[in-house]
Length: 168
Image (tube, rainbow, N blue to C red; front, side, top):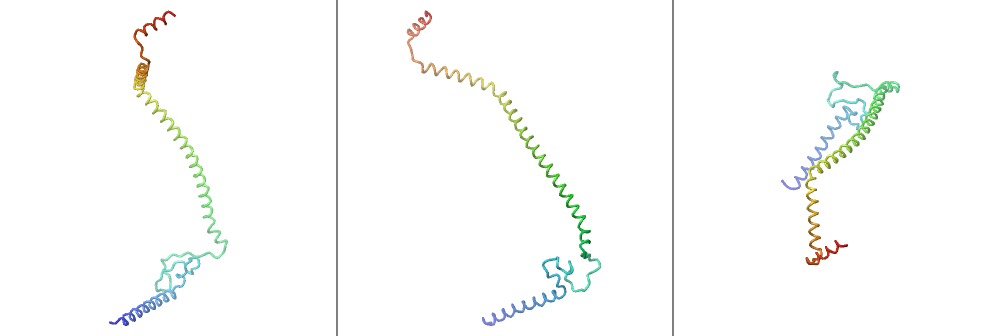
C-alpha cells in the first residue's frame, strides 16, 4: 500500500467515525433533549434514563414541581425551621466547646505547675545527701586553695606572730 492510499484511508476512517458519533448523538438528543441541558433546574423531566421508550416506568419515582409560591413556602418552611433550630444548637455547642477549652487550658496549666513542684521536691529529697557532700568537698577545696596560695612563712615567724597576737 502506498503512502497516499494510507493517508486517504485514515482520513476516510476519521470522517466516518465523526459522522457515526454525530448520528448517535443526534438520535439521543431527539429522544430526550432535556438530558443534554447542564443545569438540572431547566430540565423538563429531572431524571430520565436515555432508553428508547416513550413513557417513564411506573416504578420510577419523580417529584412534581409546585406551581405557586405558597406551595413552595409550605414545602420549604419546615426545612427552614429545622435549619434555624440546627443553627441555634450549633451556636450552643460552639459556646460550650469554647468554655470547655478555657477550662481545659486552666486545668492543663495547673497540672504542669503541680508536676513541676513534685519533680522539684523529688529531686531535692533524692539529691540532698549529694548536695551536702558537694558543699563539704567545695569547702575542702577552698581551704586547700587558701593554703596553697597563702604566703609561706617560716615556722619561727609563725610562732612569733602567734605570740604577739596573744599579747595584744
